[in-house]
Image (cartoon, rainbow, N blue to C red; front, side, top):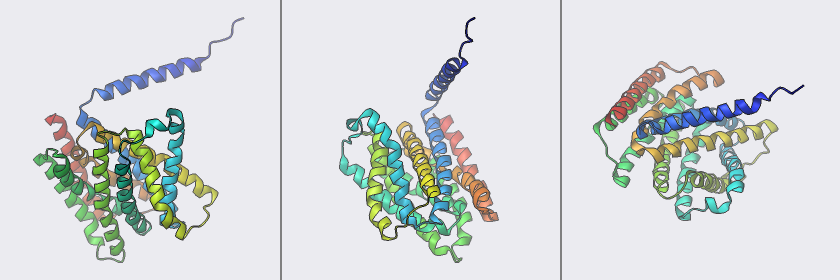
Length: 312
């Protein structure tokens, strides 16, 4: 009597074939559309990450949370470094990696200082000012074409951000809204430097050195008010490290396949994810201004996505 064949190898082979077909179809898409999809995926991952980080920062010092988030981001990447060897992750310009790490750390210090004090939706809406700095910087630094559609989409998106944030600047949390706003130029400079690094560095190298440099620069601030994390907090930071590496991978891939300015408009969708997660996790009910601004932002996002696809 012969034994029945094991169905697992067949199912695994079928899954691999389907994944290969999906990967081939994705590679055949227009580069701008690929960049928009990678950028949208990074926004969704970062929204989940921000919710988890906000929960952790409410119970532990924000600068310690910043250090542990990037420390675990580095630990997540170590198996890949072990597999491919240190030589595969050796950067061509170490100074560029440390410069990017310093800029990103400065932006994170402002961001984490304000994170426990404002809602996820408002935090995300304020972060939408970064694409304006990015598009201007991309025009001067990389000579990327700035068609009128991109400027108009960002202008409409910025108008939506003003609708969301404007009524809150005069309240008790107005100071922290301004602190969060100050982080946008720092992140914009970091992303522009990332775009420059993608010309001669691999995605894995950029991710690994970002985690390493930000962890090193964040350590002194973390040690000032260090407190032992609980077991659940350690697990939360481990998950943050995984989500952070995944989000930055998607973001860097979007920079590889398309102009950085063409991918920024889709980031306005992050407000939708942040509002939903904030309502489900923290019971933050979005205000009418947040909903109205989100509608304006989504309209700009969908319009520029269609224009970019037709233009190509």
